[in-house]
Image (cartoon, rainbow, N blue to C red; front, side):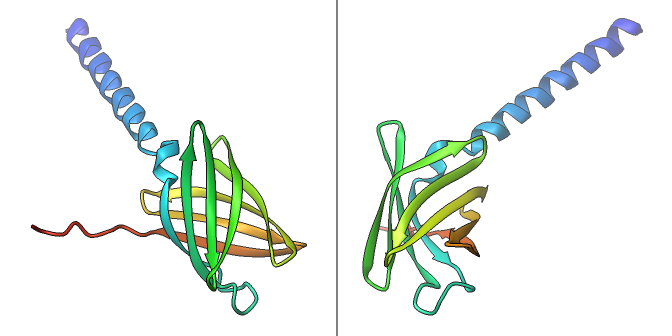
Length: 132
């Protein structure tokens, strides 16, 4: 009787560990790669929305933000634990951006622009597959 219960407990624990490892693999570095719309309603007028193309070059991430047809390049996005961090200039203003992945198609974070903290939400642009 005891061996049967221990076997069930061991099997259950093994299944839980496998499920957790699969869940942990779901959010990988490659998941943030792609084209995103971003929204920052508290940002100054004209800077409240745009797109962000996150690319993987070798082992590093980089990005190109487009706001009002103006492109800004971010040479490196660093990942620390589950948080992504980068710095860039927007019209001469130094911006420090941190964000996390909240799901397959959503990133949330904060942009610090010279002391003004602005919440930012990214939504992945998923292209529809066209039928042939």
